[in-house]
Length: 406
Ligand code: SF4
Ligand code: SF4
Image 1 (cartoon, rainbow, N blue to C red):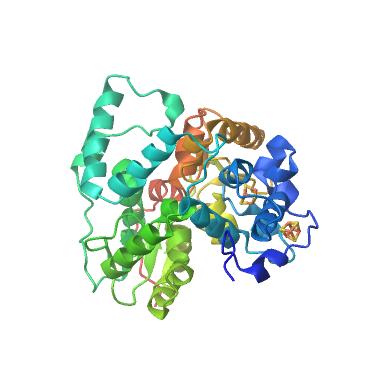
Image 2 (image 1 turned 90 degrees about the vertical axis):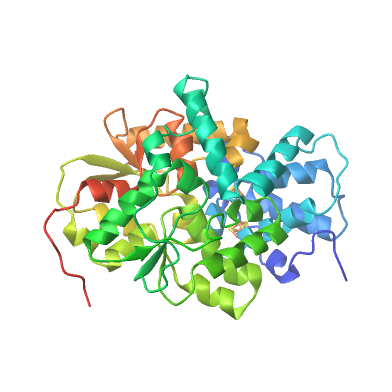
């Protein structure tokens, strides 16, 4: 029997309403509202599935206000797969018209559609728009609060040195869409670190750009599946796939679930976060102590989803004096496009994170380390100096030659 959201009933009933996830939910922490908590959202999904409440604007808002950080999932003792439930609910909402004034504004949904379907998926269009953005930034037309990183013409003009589509390489470096346009310097740093330990990396072949993470978040599963197939085809063979954007890494690691094929599951099993892979190749031993203090911020998709956050400490611990925040990895409010879609909530959530970062010592001279572009832009917009673990590792590289572990 079909239900309004088509969610897995076993996943839905797994929640025993214990509330242990509530302190780990950023939207609950800033609103204190049950409907803005994981438990409240699951109860709302269940009520809609059972036909107890209508699928109306109140429900839509409860779903749209979720950052999809999955802090609740990591904290849940009952193993409720909240991420999959929320993705399923979003997909159901995206596929049906909901007439209610409380739904997100039409203009915002139209912009989202253009960005997701016409810009992120067409890399040349994205790069052209990035040049326009660079020009606007150059004449101070882009306010800092928008969080757009400082774009550099030299970065945009100069392709990465790694070959493209080389199936004989030791590893693939997934370059993505926004990362390649706005943070190519991070890829350069990642290649430098990998090169220093003797790893020959290749960029993906054609189609290896947008991974579809934002499409999954927005409920556009069919588009995400098309992009996933493209990405899989762009990196054939068995070599590891190294990803230096936590959100993309989490999406690639979920391709088995998204596509439901053995090929996709095998591809997902090859995915490694940059820090994880760099440590496995001995990069940490090749860094020298800088004496610099760095405050570590764990992107949710690195910590709660990939659970690869310890590798950042393993990679950088020898080179930097690392400081931790005392907020148990609470989300910063970036959440893919969340900071654009829900600006007020995103800013309230960020204010909590900013307090935790400052308490840990982040200031104008102390770098915050973050492995995800969304978090980087969101925190930079609040005045923090943010660098990627790959950039920090590249800065601390010893110039002595090393041999690779066998
Ligand atoms: S999602 Fe998990 S932690 Fe949260 S209320 Fe339900 S069972 Fe408890
Ligand atoms: S995914 Fe994040 S924002 Fe959404 S309910 Fe879970 S903890 Fe809260």
